[in-house]
Image 1 (cartoon, rainbow, N blue to C red):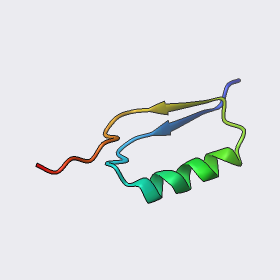
Image 2: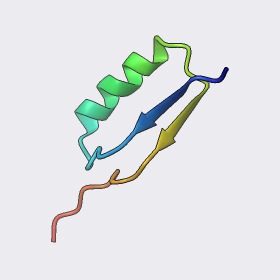
Image 3: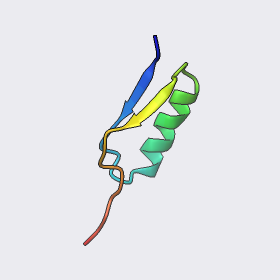
Length: 43
């Protein structure tokens, strides 16, 4: 059975994303799926 990692609501937080990706590198994940809200923008 494939193992998926679901990411959502990153909102441009590079430090948190880096921590999550480092954690995923230690796990046997077959696919990472981004559910949205990846970019933070200032108007």
